Amino acid sequence: MTGARFNLIDILDHLGQKHSATKDEIKFILGLSDPDEIQQLFKAARQVRGQHFGNQIFLYGFLYFSTHCQNNCNFCRYRRSNTRLVRYRKTKSQIIEAARDMADTGVHLIDLTMGEDPQLYLPGSFGRNAFQGLVNMVKAVQDETGCPVMISPGILPDEVLKDLADAGTTFYACYQETHNRDLYHNLRHGQGFEKRLEKKQLAKSLGMLIEEGIMTGVGESLDDLADSIIWMRDLSADQARVMTFVPQANTPMGNAASQDSLKERIIIAVMRLILKDCLIPASLDVDGLSGLKERLDAGANVVTSIVPPQKGLAGVANHSLDIEDAKRTLDHIIPILNSCGLFPASSEAYQSWINERQHLLKRSPVKRFEAKKEAMQC
Ligand code: SAM
Ligand code: MD0
Ligand code: SF4
Image: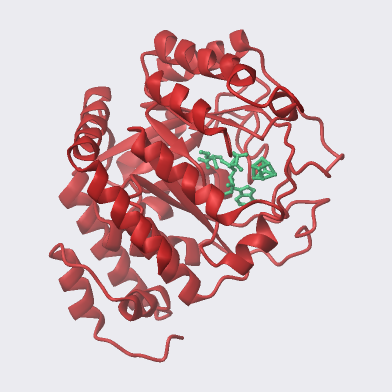
């Protein structure tokens, strides 16, 4: 518990009227444990979602095109030292075919995700040329599907981020996992905390929208969670996610206790109340299709990790759950949206949300960048 006791109804009213909250108030709502109070929190989050997005939900296809990785994140199945899995690297034509299939079913965006594939980071070839194939592939996916693209590649050289921005890539996703530096170094061992933040800032200054993300169930405190939400606000994240850590066999954190979805849902709701018009995913990658309704009920407005079957594609936190039995598809997802009184948005509605957001970014890039720099110094 946080110690301080506030009046929940007052805070929820205040946040529902577009106001902000102090860190102590954020900690207080993150720490709720009374089931009735948690339901009030979820209801308030759904109301704020409704104010900004009505009953429209966005849908993201997930395409994990290379599971090779040079890094050794302690939480991740795809860490370099895990030799007990079969990895893959999809060809450009396989990627385009899978992306086209997903676009045909009606997703709004294609999320192209990779490990930091060592083939792209070979000694001597690090730089723009090594990544030309990646940039061309993003262009081809955009052209062939007509969908906006999110790229989730980890850390890239600055000039490659620039090439991706020039190619019209809509989103750069790069998750900090936590904004507590000590915890970060336990999770993303050997990777720079500042560097990861700076890449997001650079992407934003180049005109791309950014997604920030955290994990819960990794030893974080309420204070850490409140800090992360404040970071997301100060970074002007366009999309903000939380995922419950799923322990992975043959990794250093493989024997950790698993956490149920309640904390994740509380964080989703608090993000909604604080970040308001930000996109907030309900990922199918943690609890599969059966965890979708409860995440939407907490105020999420994007379904992510939609994966087509029969393509040999993997998830991240759950590499196979619900994929080959086609449950991560719109046929299964749409009835669940409808049961919550929600509907898939049109592609035009998604594109106009993006346009509006990019327009805002163009109007005040310097101010936003300075605000973020100040936030980094706190
Ligand atoms: N390699 C790139 C990178 O690390 O930025 C792209 C992959 S990234 C989109 C994979 C994300 O999935 C991680 O940042 C983390 O948030 C989440 N993730 C990975 N392993 C997980 C696990 N075991 N449980 C829950 N989430 C996990
Ligand atoms: C998801 N498995 O949406 C995906 C992944 C990467 N941008 C997203 C973590 O849950
Ligand atoms: Fe590699 Fe990304 Fe997994 Fe870390 S989270 S090991 S960078 S794939």
